[in-house]
Length: 84
Image (cartoon, rainbow, N blue to C red):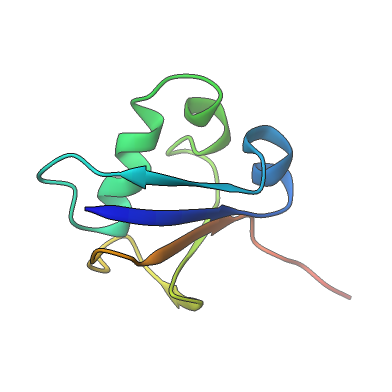
């Protein structure tokens, strides 16, 4: 299945603005997409590391790692935003 990835803020600095990927069989949640990207090695491993606080969105809606992924979805990764 093909999906579109978007990266923002410090993740964008490390990985660029985004990419279109074809997921391997079995990658069916946003968390599994993150794990698969980490498995690609650097620079994804550093930018998306499990210990790193990241927010995720599916089709421009905030989601958690258990959110399902379907063909054509847009998945975004970005650091938490703070304001004052």
